[in-house]
Image 1: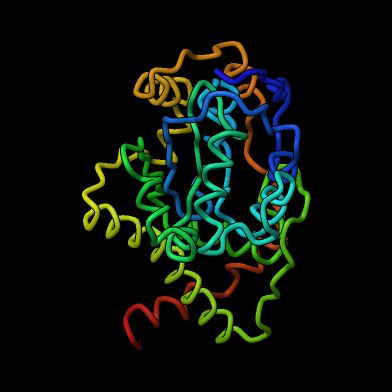
Image 2: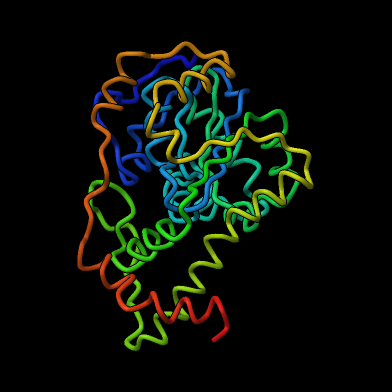
Length: 272
């Protein structure tokens, strides 16, 4: 256990909250257990991280996202770009000291985080003996649409706080169809990239669908905690699950993400 555990478990934190110092802990026992959530965008990984946080299974977060790493690392005296090759090792070690619960360091990882910053010895070490979850969303079309809406609004989490610059939709239908196809390639490539990594590196990931996560969150988190030999904080987990609900939907942005695209996309599919 850490020398002092001070992180708040009585509220549902968003991305901005989780980047801040409220979720740093005093340096104590190094987090020797590793939990890696491999997920493509818009699969429910933020909610899984919040459930695990409340349950006492690490403090999982997108630590390998430059936007967040560049805020977290310097707070601990690390360089302003801690994901650079020469700093990534010390950054991971700092995370194992300052972002850990019950001996578990957890990270929510997208494939572009891996290819950008972890195709190296520190990345190999991170995956060594890690408990790896592969979180996926069977409905790829809905996943891509959700990603397009988030890109268009700059809002990625439930609170509605903007964390990226909005990306405009192209003006013409043809351009929007082409953009959808490029977005589809990116999102599906994130999934395919992880599966290739698992095959190459001999990683035995535990597959978890978004539907299963939201159908039975207590059971899902319970299995993860058991695998990592962590006692569940049942009451905090129950509160976090009770507070979980679908993200507010921007109907105008959602309509703009999909309107008029069915026919041109089908023509692309069948090369007509």
